Length: 603
Image 1 (tube, one colour):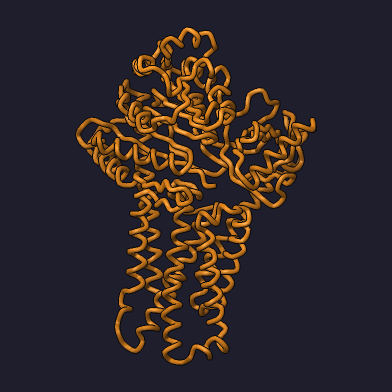
Image 2 (cartoon, rainbow, N blue to C red):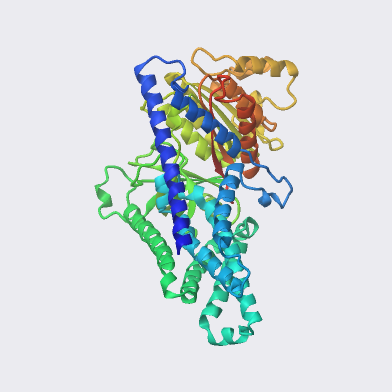
């Protein structure tokens, strides 16, 4: 009992620490924005007093320790890539607390040794159950307090479950050994239902632990979700039947967290998708149930959905859950909202776009369904139900430079951030934005071209220096982009052309937009609209060099955002950590902070 209270004191202290850090960062960001608004300051993100300098130095050290991540590049084994160093440090602290609870005062070699260790580990296991179910909730009180989002705590949910499996195994092993030594195993199994329920609980926990590893999740994610929910409910029931009455409050705590989350989500589903008077809307597209949704297939690789008349506001970087009964009657999937504002050209009060890249399962069926509608000439609209938005993003306008890096449909996350900071009416510190988009197929990039051109024009009008780099690495795919065949800077460019590009990138045009010139190609390039503001490449981008050039060109704090697969994310993590260490950020050299925000594909 005392150890259970100690465990929750530890959890409460950790949450309180995160809250305190959140408050300090909020105050410092508010101070930056206020200082830039009231005074003419060249670099408002630089620390101005002893406290802010100490805080910045401590933050820089923590970032350098937490960002690095090793990547396992072996085909079929990349799922064994360890977590980032920051998460490993958190797990080490958590495991130290758990081990202390497991052994403190229990390792006394007497006749009660086996029962005492088994009983202690039963409490350690049971105490973690409510925390496990809290972390699994989308309506997550821990995320709300700490200023993060439920999906960013999902890794901790998995590792707490694995830790709980270890403590449950220790509990079962010591009690099993005790029963064998006392020759009571057969009697216990035949006459004591609690023993049988305990074995079933352990088997369910083993099943959930194994199937939660990425290779099994990826086989059929929809099946994984259904069986995981059913297993979690069955696990609570079997544990409830296994434990004594005075310990059942842990199960009721978990049940309360589970029920509150489900009831809240159900209420949100009804509120956002049922309209009692849809005809009263001032625009077209309203309907009684759900939302009219336009499906637009882009080849076989992507599907764009325009969802009309949504009844909520959202921030850049947030996501929602999409349910298309006509395509998948029993499935809801999360997708990033790919628009930072109301879609232009739609006679709809509030419309959003989602970009779904085709993989397997639902996304593949959706693309095939959209192409079938397009080929048959039928109306390409369906009814969609949505729940959201979810997610919590940093305050992007508190940085002086933004580096946005994405792979393929990862631009659905980074491009709205770019559009949001350019269109924001709030005070912003941003002076420069570097945007990098890499993809294998041209059609994955072509969708974003028009919006990037609009962003370039907007950047000119607000005085933000914007550079855009697009890398299409598939063989011959670069020429599939509009006008790219005339302006691409492929890997076989001459050294003279590369030198000119590097020289021009170091200086901005009169409007504040870098003009990438390609030597003798420039004459042809100048005749094709505003593509001269976008540098194209057919080779893999130098991510580390891209980040370095942006950081070294700024005098204030830089925010780096990456959205992509595991290999890209790990590369960016290592690059930022190495660059921060080399420049001795906030350690007397004058180099300013580098913040990293990661959104990783979870297929």
